[in-house]
Image (cartoon, helix red, strand yellow):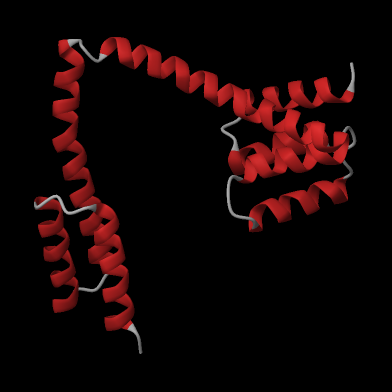
Length: 172
């Protein structure tokens, strides 16, 4: 078997047997070191993929593929990494698309929305209670956040305004 097909099947296997990201590094180490790259190259690849923006697993796949087979190896490794989750998501989407007209699915979603809202409120309260600002400033942020949610303010605008307010009011 040539190097490109070995790369492809290795990354298919790694992405089917792990949850990808940092969890796949151990399995990928076992599969790639000594076969495609040296241990020093693998350590360098993990370090490089950790500091670059984007998906660590995809960058690691491209690095190992490139080290073993040049540009075609990098592209084949990337394809092997992307293919399993893409097929799984497409399958789940097709199933959900067929089920969306079912009455029980819409009832499930209608019941799920309040449960998620309550879960978010309890989580926010725990964060607020344990380490958040509990003075007037913290309560103001909570009330303004609730008002933004109630009036359906655009999320991007709320995040930008919150960042500006935080910079202005919390700077020393």
